[in-house]
Structures are given as structure tokens and as C-alpha cells.
Image (cartoon, rainbow, N blue to C red; front, side, top):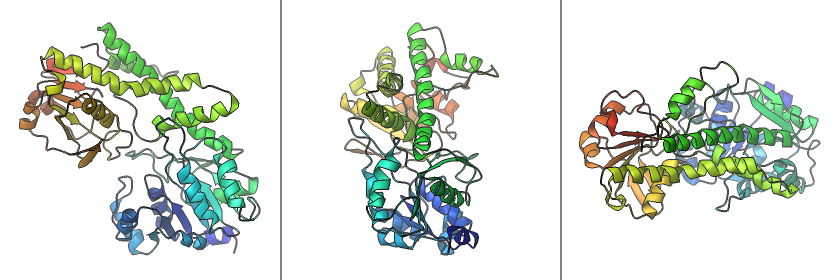
Length: 440
């Protein structure tokens, strides 16, 4: 049977390698519209949870997952031999970088080898993991073609970058337009047919390299603009009489030529922090140095250290030595209203403090019950008036919506606000030190 026929009668089996923030929502979407889905992951705990209908990704509705598992539309396994039973395969594995900021594509290579070991004619393979240009054609394609099968003739290979934004409700896997570039025109056509079953809009580009570069551009654009406002925030603090938050709000009234970005304690998550280094590393292959991109990344990575210095100065003004300070962090996730702690700037600031001998650290996060920082394990503490009064400093690192900032400020001795979360607090504002507000 052709792919068209299998898609039409919903007998095409979809395989998803990597059941994290990208793979699991995608798997559930395909299962919801009626396709049999097999999810693959090397983590046996994830597989066990999914087979019980237990959800661990906020962007997936518990009821949706339970239903597709109960209806036997979706299963999970770490037996990669079952890839041979699939018609379309999405590779959604992590792409971290090394301590030296070099890309780590070992997960992609491992996934490609598993696919190659179970490759059959007619399969469509779509790489979604964020990576540098030419990964699809110079890493994945050769691994698959070692089987003797040829891309564009025997199987179909394409790249379609993920566009997941954890916690976002208005754009989901089903409603966010996707970019797609195939190794050949037929690869593009086959992959587009598959993706269109769960996505409203597919934008086709000329090659996998163009699709890979598109993803990097999207996140480097954000990295550069966030770096700009982070630098202006530190300048505003230095000047002492300018509030960068007020300036951004005023500039945003311009109906054209400006898009607001906001400063903070650093860049978190996977994409914006990691992606610029993927392109910078690849550029060196062509004797090209991405100075602008690297400067932005350097600026953003310096922010946790700037927040640390801001804290030291604020505590000093209150007569509290850093090593004796009791510090409460509000928010461990990298962004508001999610449980995602990947590359969280809150964790980075905690690491800096621990390295300086400040060990009396406490945190609260309604989404993150437990947190490991270096070799220490912390548990989220209940946010009570007694706890707020006990600590010397409250550090707002994630502006979760459910926090009552009036209550927090009223009961605290000192609040360092890195997210402008206290902008509407009316009372006791003398206790607040806001990043980029010119105070301290």
C-alpha cells in the first residue's frame, strides 16, 4: 500500500523516537486523530508511566493521554526493533552542547542507527531535533544509506524543526505552522503528507539545510534581542535614574519597527541558550566567526553573575554578609507557569552562591517539587509569612502567575526582582530591588 492510502485509511503507524517535550505532544496528536503510534525512549521510567497512561509533560492533557493509551492508539517501548513496524518515524531526541560549547549530536546518531537497523522501503523519516545545517544530509542520510537503501527512492528523509514553547496555550503542536525541507522533492512530498495529518500549515523550503537554518535563525533572533535589553538593563542600573522596564513599555507603544523583549536573570530552556552555539560551531568549518551571535550569547550567559553581584550589593546595604545570608528563591523553572528546569537561570545563580560558600538556600516553586543543584538536593518549601520573614533576601527568578506579590513583599525584608513581577505592588516598595530599575 502507498503512503497516501495508509494515511487515508489511517493504517499508517507512526513512530516517535524521544518522548520528551517535543516527542510526546506529537505522539498524542497523531493518536488523537486515529493513527496507531509507537513511542520509543531509552528511559524505562517514561515508558512505564506512559503505558499506565501517566502524563509527565504539562503541554499534554492528562485526559488525552489516558484516552489514547486506553484505546490502544498509542503505546511506548524501549524495544527499537519495533521501528520495523512503523511507516513514518519522527526523531525528537535532545541536542545538548558540551561544557566547551560544542554540539553533542550523539543522540541523533544513536537514533539514526536504530532506524537504520530497522529500515524498510517506503518509510518516511523526519528529523525534528534542533541542530546545525547539514546534519540531515551529512550525518543521518549516510547512516541510513549504509543499509543499501537510497533516500528519495527507497525511503524518504526530511528535516522539520520543532517549534515547542512550553506552557504556551494559544499555539500548540496542531496549530503552530511548521517548516519542512526534504532531501529530494519526493522526500518533501512524502513528509508533507505525513505532517499535514496533525498540523494546519506546512511551509516547504528547498532543502533540509534551509529548514535547519530556519530553526537557528528563529532562536538566534530572540537571543540577540534579549541580549540587547539585558545589556541596557545593566546600563540602567549603572546610570541609576532610568527604569528599563518603563523604557521598554514606552517603546512598545510604537505600532511599527519595534518588538518588545525583556531582560532577566539569564536565558533558560533548551533552544535560545543552546542553538546559537550550534551555528557558531558549524560556521568555523567555513573559516567564519559569528562574532555578533557569540557576543549575544556571552551577554546572556553573564546575567546570572550580574544578578549575583546585584544580590551582594543589596545584602551589603542591609548589613548582611553573603556567606551568612538566608536566601529564598521564588521559581526554579526557566519560565513562568511551567515545570521545565532545563538550563534554568535560577539554578545557575544557586550554583554561583554555593560556590561562594553561601549554603543557606531555600526555594519555592509550585511546579518543581524537588531540585538538584550540584550535589545538593533541595525540596520546595511552603510559602508562608513565617518563611518570608525568616530569610534575609527573597530572589524572584521566575514570575509564576499564582504568586501573590503583595503578600510576598509585605512579609519580606528584601526582595530582588529579576522579572519585574512586582511592578504592580503598591505597598512597601522600598523593600524591592528590581533588575534594570536603577536601584542598588
